[in-house]
Image (cartoon, rainbow, N blue to C red; front, top):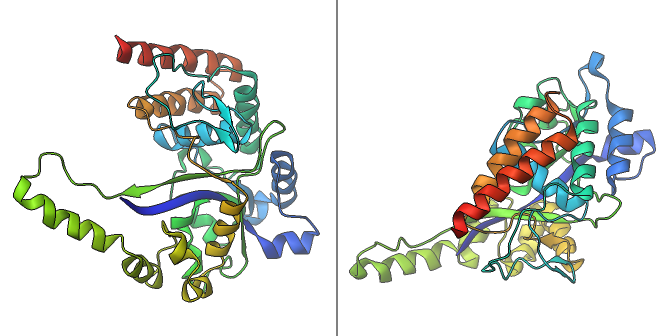
Length: 304
């Protein structure tokens, strides 16, 4: 059962953009232009923060950036709104890492380095949002569940000054908000005489009343549309209205991180190889070729 459903968005400083006369960044080109405008390291101010730490953090970033450029990480069939991640029990699934669109995504990440904080290669989930909340970053990719870092901190310069957008799109992509989050499950080895009570607890924890209570105490996730549309909830944060609008525009998408058994291995491979690329050890083309070969080996091992 979904417990916390949290899309990854682009956080941006509305006040900085207004002062500079810039529109919110809806394309990757606009992100780079804005990042360049706001990047002033001598003043302790940087253009953008994102997940670039080696391994899982960067692996997620690369997969979602590929999606921004219209490239799924697997050979998924194209459908309205994106790609089909609902039929993954296929024998012909293969990685699609070494492709022209994935190369565009890798080169975009390389370009972001120039306008990122000096410790970007060690930044992961929380590290990218903390400096944003401290007023040092103009833009940051971040999950909605991290918004309380500045929404609940009245001293944060980003408090009340943050706008929320889906991921800006590359030339062949569309704006999307990749969905992540957490689910509650009942262990398969739980004794039968405990399963009914466990199910009752699961229903209670995911009920509209419980989810509203979480939000009233700081959460910024709403798996139920009814809770996100609640007037009391809407008053607590503009994030709920923004996410609801993304849903209406078909921008909330699950396909960037398809739930296959090998997904953690693919994420790790991308996070390792791309980190070497960002450190200058390998070129983008070499990086993608090596990641593709390793990912294909993982998929073949699973079928064998």
